[in-house]
Amino acid sequence: MQKFDKYLHVVAFDVPYPADYGGVIDIFYKLKSLHDQGIGVILHSYQYGRSEQQELLKWCKEVHYYPRKTLRNPFYGSVPYIVRTRNSDELLQNLLKDGFPILFEGLHCTYYLDHPQLKNRFKVVRTHNIEHDYYKSLELSETKYFKKYFFKVESERLERYEEVLKHADLIAAISPEDYKYFNERYDSAIYVPAFHSNSDAKYPQDKGDFVLYHGNLGVSENYEAALELIRNVFSKWKLPVIIAGNNPNKELEKEIELYDHIQLVTKTTTDQLHKLIAEAKINMLHTNQATGIKLKLINALYQGKFAIVNPLMVENTGLEPLCVICNDFEAMRKAGEEYFEKEFSINEFNQRMEYLNLHFSNKSSAKKLVQSIDFQTDSKAVKRVSKKVRSTLISSLRSYFLP
Image (tube, rainbow, N blue to C red; front, top):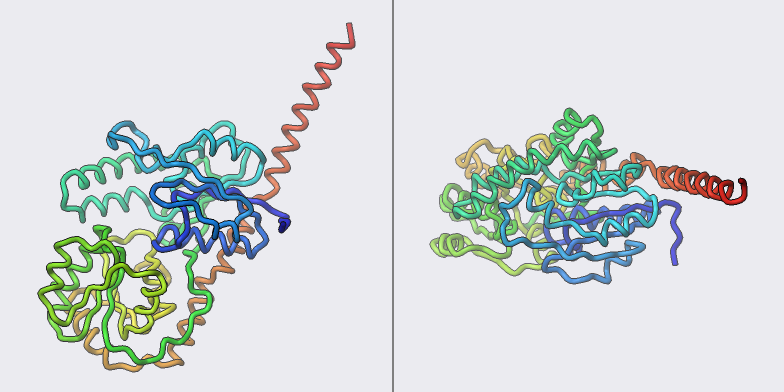
């Protein structure tokens, strides 16, 4: 069994394998990168719909699973639903078995961040978003009343609850803009770019005969973006278009059926999606939410050719120099027609890789995170406990033997 010099608890909001959507992609490749840095990771995962995964034991010293507690009334209480449904006495007891530092993945997992028994532990929170802003944007894009109201209430609870971050020793923000926000408020933030799967990117060749939009189409943000692109860009030209993603709703399916040059591809595996990204001449991405950082944009830049985006997709991410940024749909339409005829050269690819490897390397990000964590806190905590126990024992012996 491999021995490690340093150990770290990681509390994940979901089982991070398979790494097939934004949040768990960041967690899974972070686990691999920490392992490569010689860190013995003790992973704690909340479960809701995902099974236990043996694959995780390749990268973690231990893996523990806890059921997420769904509630009949998601509006009850002041603690956000995404936090309140992730608490486990067993998790707390497992964290208390040693004095190792703890990395909480997202505000979702911070139920025990301010627990008195963890007061002397070094605690890191990886922020994947400014969560109340993210839920506010979900409210604005949602059309179903119940979901819309839930997102409104959750956003308000998250904004109040965020104060719990003052109990973190370190906040690892996922984007430069998020770093500014958290550092201004809690003065303990660092910027650690998103971890991703693109460690060995290859030149995708110049050939490409379609435009691609991809995303989880079951998420309101993504299917709304797809609908807007279809109605305002894709329907205006005859270039072949593929919209790829799982769980599309009926409205999106019906819209796509109106156009012979637009194809819907669903039930895609990660490998199949990566193949589409590499084969497309253009990856066109659009969002109405300037929250966090979009891992699908990082994937498009590592694996694909031209990336045409709207400002909210790329602002304050550090990826601006690598994208064609269009301020409106008409500009996106014209850029698509222009870049569909351009060559994506190996020289352009190499320059892009040089920039990405400098600013978004998993290895560099893991090193920065490891260097920012106080791994000595555990020994200090153990010494404090040992000293207290020794003092109590000596007092007891004195009272027993002395009159």
